[in-house]
Length: 226
Image (tube, rainbow, N blue to C red):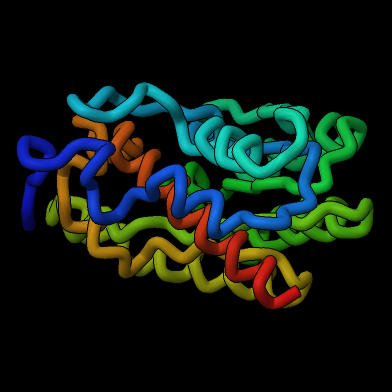
């Protein structure tokens, strides 16, 4: 377990990307309308970290696309804290579909983990409905696997079985619908407390910066696959 926030900042963080690296990854990116739905991660909650911009991951991804686009992409973020996967589907899917994204990100399931009756089948169905609908409407879709927060906060290790189950379901949905999946479970930053807010649940601004970098790299891989 490490804490490197006092030794690195956004300019030299080995897990972040320079502007030049962003442009290399996203060269030729076609996306002009970026939509985000989800929970507090989508909304962008997180504490500031010295040396890092107070800018959530989704806005960082928007700005990354703007570096290679002829104009800043249209952007719609409907993320709201404390929502379950079903609540995200019921409250945000129609509106984001009306926005008409050609790239959409979905973060869901984290709040379901804490429910007494955690229902992975129900979460998977809700996420699948969101991803399938967005794909059917012509959007490339990004899904996410949770970070292993127990690596930094051992007292939360009891959540690992549920988190692994959720990550497995999210990856399965992504594979069925040819979505871009960003798997954060084994990322080296998982054991670094500077990646998290002090509530031990939400990502810090350093964590947001790293998540944005991983998203850009995953999109770059998709572009290279054609």
